[in-house]
Length: 614
Image 1 (cartoon, rainbow, N blue to C red):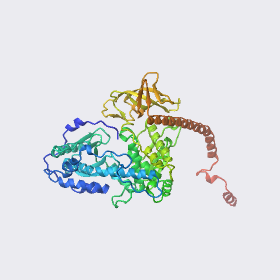
Image 2 (image 1 turned 180 degrees about the horizontal axis):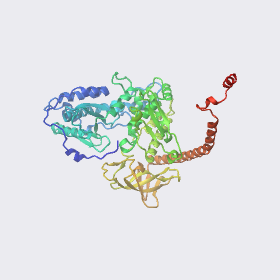
Image 3 (image 1 turned 90 degrees about the vertical axis):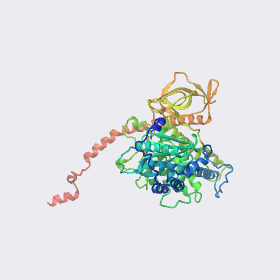
Image 4 (image 1 turned 120 degrees about the vertical axis):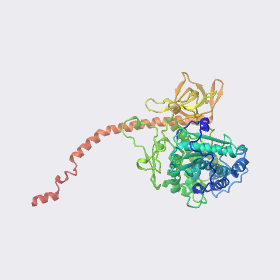
């Protein structure tokens, strides 16, 4: 979805088109609860408790206001954990022959599970409250509330939102748009909160994101820096189809089967990839990056490869060793931009997948461009309905993705598969792979408050005529969002807004940065790669280690792209030289080769004998 502006004030004051505030509260039936149970059983108990308590408007929901939500103060919400167990947490038993990397993964997954269990009851109550508001706003045209997204796929991580879709009945005579429905639900939810929670220490926030491609109502509870969130959309079958597809191919638990004792390897891989995306601040869809669904499908493809299975089988009875192998295979497969240049598609039934490298046809700029053109086709669509889930990725964003994928690959290659040379070697490497970047490191703000923002940008060609822009260190002095933009960040694909930057030169030996001679440069947000940390050092600046590593790695990537461009030009020249000879051979072949219409006139021993006999 495209990034959005949030019209908080105006949306709060908009009265819904069809909300009967005098109508009594209906009993919440089991229709949506059954659907939610099919997706995630642990969402049912809290939801049903709230449902039963809300049979009458005069009854106070025990799980909301008096129970979970009021008992835990917002500041008491569990914070997002680091990728390790707390020191006081009992360490899990170490499987025979395992190394510290396997223990690290076990602890990381265990900590995530522990965190999700702590917030599960709050999530249950929020979902139940949202469902009640939907019923109040839409009855009798409310259909069902369905759990989708990471919670339904069982790949949620700390900080994941809970995604639900409100389906309305098809016989709704009012024919309300999705935005109208969300406005009704928004109003009903505010009314519900006003009636029941004014005297309780709960912290509800609602945001109606109404200019996105798919309107969303965000319901948050808790402190602003660490809320529990539920995202509500209306009549969107796509997310539900994705959940059912993942369940059908075995990448997510099936609702018709008992929960597995141990999560499948592919599910654990998806969860770790999703955690890596969050820890490394990989740009999300709304910022102009790859959708999470595209990343998950890319991981499913790698997990389904024969070589991945064979490598994982070597691990035998050690699940974490198999997981480590699966993760290494994922980052190896997509380690550079050339590996992202193609189309990933799945069979409709999910039995097969294929990544086809892009064919370079013709002599135009596109055929010679070294940049990747990635397409991940929606597996729930086929034929004319086929949809590419990946938006256009500009060079700056491609550089960031290539660096992060290469960084993870290089580190995972160093993890010993057998005995470690030093105790804890594998664990230290994985700590780097999943090392958390500061929030907002890969996001461009839509404003500059006081000090300039230090960043990496692409600006000007490193080698003339190659189409490969060079990576530069810059100070962003000012930002001018395009007309009508209200969000606090700018899109990575935005070529309408403007940012004014001063370029810096780096001393490789000292790591110092100095202002480059010349005037400031005007760029668009699509040229933004990431932020870096610069410390003032007299009249110069010193770049931090993380930023320096990024800068050098991306400079190397651009150099490789220049070489790739030159190789493509050489291949094109050879093909152009060979083309006339091939065309001449083709003409001669057409003159001498028999065709369907003339084959009977070609002499043959059999026909010659028949002619003589006649």
